[in-house]
Length: 127
Image (cartoon, rainbow, N blue to C red; front, side, top):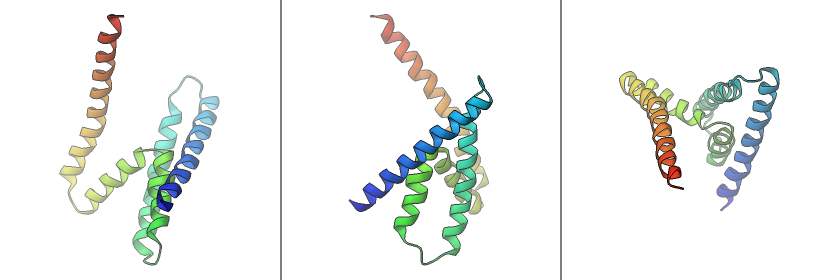
């Protein structure tokens, strides 16, 4: 239960930061979708720092890793988890699989977004 609450609280902090950064970037570049790009790039960078930190620091608790990686960075951007998965495949030398997952995530998510939009459009026409 404690991990559940810690992850939830740290995810809320990440989400609030995502909103603040997004609002700030939109104020600087109105009409441009740089808010999501900014938090995704920041999340990738922070996930890289976190991976390196946890790889060289043996006596850090699993709870802290959950708070930072799953909670805070998950709330900041789900792109950080995607980046960490790809990075781990690349570290293992599985570049082809990493490329396949990269394409599957981007193209698959975009295709399913279109499919969801199409399905909703069809069902909404009947009203």
